[in-house]
Image (tube, rainbow, N blue to C red; front, side, top):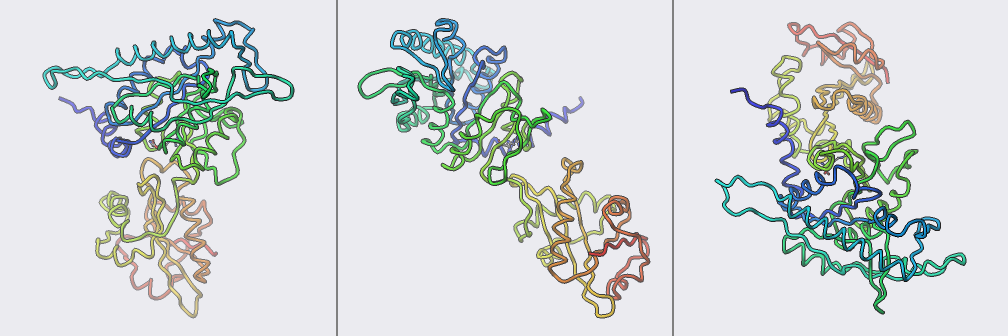
Length: 434
Ligand code: ARG
C-alpha cells in the first residue's frame, strides 16, 4: 500500500507545535460577522480539537449582527461605539445569551469522534460561561451619552482560570456588569485583549473577514514585527493597537486570520509559516552567530548537500571546533540557513575571506534568506578588515555572479588556500571585492 507521505510529513512537522501549545492559554476572538460564517462549525470543531490537545481556550465573541437584527437601526453607532439604551440592553443580553447557548451546543456536538475500539467513553468538550467581565460605563463623550455601552474594567482572571483548570472551553459574551448591578454591552476585541493580558496568554487570535492583515496591494502580510516601523496596511488597522497592548503586556504572539477559510486556525497554529498574519513584539526570525548548541541543526541543514556531493563533507568534530565561523538564521527554533566565513590574511594580496557552507532549508530556498545571510557575512568580513570575499562552487556559480562575484583564476586566491584546492572537484573560483 502506498504511504500517504504528505500526511506523514505534515504530522511530523506539526509535532513541535503540538508540544509547544499544550497547557498554553489562547484567547480567540470572533470579530465582525464570524458567528454567521458558514465556516463557524469547522471553527468550533477545530477549537474542540485544540481543547483535546491540552490548549486552554477562551472564546470571545460579539453578537453584533444578531443584535442589530433584533434592534434595527435604533442601535446607533457613534464613532467606534454603539449607544445602548437601558431598554435595548435587555434585548442585547437576551440575544448574546442565546448565542452563548448556541455555541455551547455546537461544542457539545463537535466533540472529536474517538474510535470506540480505542476508547469506550466519548470525550465531551465541556464549555463554561459566566460573569467574567466587570464593566464601567463609557459615559458621556463629546456630549453623547453612551448609556449602557461600557468599557472593560476588569477581567476576572482567577474565575476563568478555574474553569480552564477544569478542562472547559470558556465562552465570553460581549457583556459585563458593574458593581452596582448594571449590565453593559462591551466590545469583544477589547474583552479579548484584556483577557489575554490578564491571563498571561500565549496567544491572542483574531478571526476576521480577511485572511490576515493586508498590505496596500491586498496581499496577506505574514509577520508584523512591532519593534519595526509598521507596514502600510489596507485592513485591520483597528486591531493593531490591541496587538501592541497585548505584546507589551507579555502575550507571546497575536494572530489575525480568516473566519471563512476552513482550516485556517490549524494551519496557522501547526505550521511554521502559518497562513494569516502573526504580530510579534520582536521578530521570531533572527540572524545570529552560531553556538555549539547549533551543531546538530547545522549538520541537518548541510548533510543532504554533502551526500549529494554539492558540499565537501565536514565531520561533527570539525564543525564543533569551527562553530565560531558560522552564522545562522533561526526561525521559531529551527535553523533555516547557515553560512561560514574563513579569513585568510596574507600580506601581499590583502585580506581574503572564504564564504563557505551557505545553505538554506529546502522550504525557504525561494526566499531572500540566502541574500540576508550573504549580507551578514559580507558585513562581518568588512569588520574583520578583509577586502575580498571568495567562494568555491561547483553548482551555484550563477547565484553568486548575480550578486557581484566574478570568476577568477585559482592563483588569485591566497597561497594557503590554493594549497587546499581539490583538483578533482574542479570548483569555480568566484571573488567579490568588498
Ligand atoms: N505555528 C506557529 C505558531 O502558532 C507559527 C505561526 C506563524 N504564522 C505566521 N503568520 N507567520 O506560533
